[in-house]
Image (cartoon, rainbow, N blue to C red; front, side, top):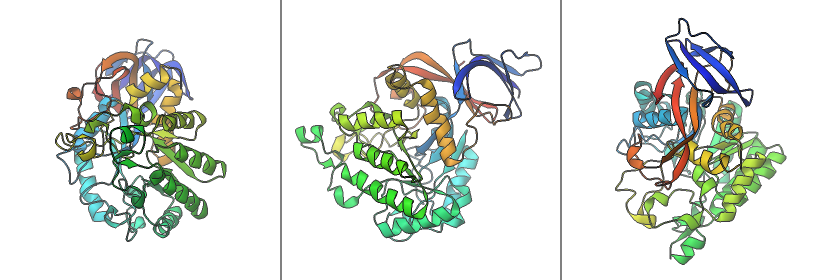
Length: 424
């Protein structure tokens, strides 16, 4: 199919420029101020007001298959991603079986090949059975099939084990994408050890449980030369440690999530839809994360989309499962709370959601130029809507943003030149 996007505000060379974009054979064929629509199968008019960007990339999402298809499937999760303007999802290894060898990984990739509507690239585990202790896996056996290696949901508990993993991955040129959490410091906590926990008699998770491992791992990355990516940072100390490590030349990058940039523990309610790991931290942590976005310490905004069943999320803050959904709200939340308020530009948001993730993880499609793969999204940045989980495509419904009035909607998702979602 040949597809022509007319009159789009197009992300070219890190700025938005008015351009027509002709797509042919899965790639961007040409860009110009005016392209004739003769012999084109489909024309979409962006009306001089919609923004055409490289498709969003989520480097931290949970699609739950194999093993937990009652929470989400690769089909429903990838469809939710397509609806939201994502063309690429990197899936975390909290699965059964965990992708810790070629056979277990194939159980996942077979479903991806069959059901995914956009690009889905899995992570392999760091340790066998994703335990965070014991033995590291045979990285080389699956290195060419994965985005990198992560034990997400579990921190690697010993320095020796992480050093072994980083040494191996440095030789392979693969990323360690670490969930940083010291088990001995958790002490039964389930929300942030802060204002809300103290005033509502909840057990708290201290910030050190996150930043202590980041500090350890930045030193190990410096020693081994491993490319080290930190998952879902949430504390001011984490930002400071990573900022200083980058200044020393350590090959470290990191991500945070929309909820950590827009909420804090004072926004908590007695509802499982506010429970995730790491938890919503203090107001000063949120501000430090925003500062980390502004100065480039934080490279990527990822969703940590983590669907659970309604029953699993119905047991309040203490007993509910950890995790909230995020694919279908991420852009609108960030556009509303950061772009529309003047904290960051739309260009900066596109960089963090579309461009930097591709650069870090080696995923194609970060530029709109002739010959590039046509993985694109068309955004209406002014469309107003209210978050209603009943309208989600994902099987998960638990979101802390329920009821929020937002601005920003994806109108069209193009994956390899084909329309996989549209409302125009």
